[in-house]
Length: 245
Image (tube, rainbow, N blue to C red; front, side):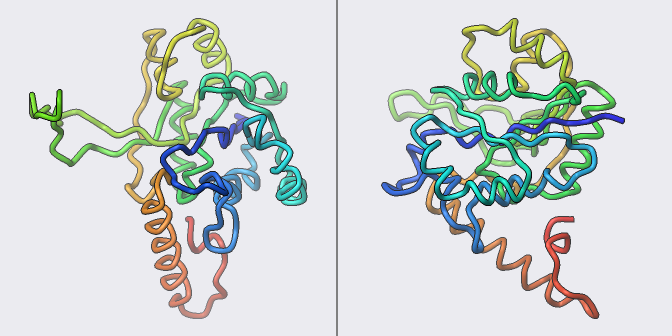
């Protein structure tokens, strides 16, 4: 049976979030820190053998103080990341256990991913070796220079990448080693650089990444809507799986 090690990345600078006190993975959403919602999508899965939360060195002490008990209860590990996403991925990869056959990487600031989405991207990674969640681009895209439109870019075939992104572990290790020093904006780019295919699994716009305060408000509204919808199911107690299946 395939076993996944999951890296939940929470080491970003949150420069666009606009909160002088907390970074976006550590703010409260529906009564819990954002990162906890993300980790909960993985820790109880039978096909996950390890979940590693990656935080920056400057946040590690505060994270231990504020969330150490939660981390222990959830059975997740903690890892210190680096200055860039690639550095954090390398640090987490170094701590992956020998039981893992595959690796998945998820943004801690994407707390709305569903069980079904994880199921489908994991299955695609097992089948093909590399798979990501993504949504087709529906907006009109403009290329701009000096604050002026230079082109309306065709959106045919364009997809917006999300996480989790999942890979066969040996393939991903090879891709990371080959990309030493390369600038990439997501993990699938590492596989693309090898010339290997990456499968697309269609996700949902609700699997948003909290980047700004407006994103946090939207995530809170989605949580509230899911709570109301689950409460209306007849003859059932409201459980977490009601929200995320």
